[in-house]
Image (cartoon, rainbow, N blue to C red; front, side):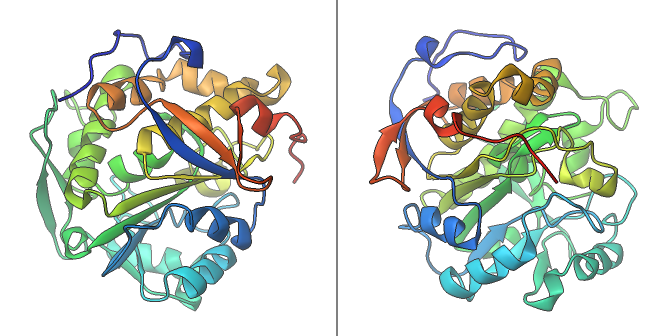
Length: 330
C-alpha cells in the first residue's frame, strides 16, 4: 500500500526534518574512480544474479560529462564480466533516434571498444504493468528488457532540461521506456511533442520507473555518480551547459528513493554559490515531485542512514559529505 504523505508542490525542497517514515541505507564514497564505483557497488549487490543488465546513459556523440567509459570497462571486468549495457532509442530526432544512428554514437563514444550494448527496443516493445498509478496502468519498454534476471542502475546524477534533475528515477523512467511508444506516453500531450511538464511529468516518470522496479523486485540496485553535474542532461551532448556544481562522490543503495533523495540533499547542502544553478533548475522544473511521488507510490524511503565507506563506515549527513567540496574546474 502506498504510504500517505502530505501533498507538496514539486517546486519546494523538503528538508530532512520534515520527512516521516522509515530509513534506508545509502553508501557514499568521495573516490571518483572505477575503484570507488566498485567499492560502493559491492555493498549493494547481494541480489544481483543471473543474466544482468546495466542501465547506463551512454551519451550523445562526444558528450563531455558522461561516466567515463574506462571506469565502466574496469567495473564490468571486475564485477560483472558477463553483464550487458542496455539502452533505448530516443524520442527526439538526433544521433540516437534510430538503432543505426545509436550504434554509430556508441562507437564514437568508445563503448564498442570493450562491450556490446543491447538497444532493447531494436526489435520492438513490451508492456509492463504499473501498479497503483494515476496516469498509467502499463508502460511500454524495450522488448528485450524482461529477458534479464537483474538490473544494475548506474546513473550519472546531473540536471535535466525538463525533469530538473536526472537521477536513478529518470535513468529508468525515461531511459527504459522505448523510443516510439513509451517515451511518447511520457512526453506527448495535446499535439505537442513535449507537452507534459512539471508535476505531471515527474509523476509519469516515476510511474514508468515503478513498472521496471516492480518487474525486477529485489534483483535491482542503484549507483549514482555525482561528477560533472551540468544543469543539462547527457542527452544534450556537447551543447550541455557548462558545469558549475562541484564534484561530490558516488552513492549506492538498494532503495531508489533514498539514493535520489540523498543526491538531491547533497546538492542542497552545498554553499549557495556552488549549488545555485542546479537548485534553480530543480526548483523551476518542480523536480522535487519526483521524490514525493515516489514516496506516495511506496517506492522507497526519503529518510536514510548515510554511510561513509571512506572512513570506517561512520554515519554522516549530506552536509558532512559536501563540506570539503572544491569548486568545479575543467
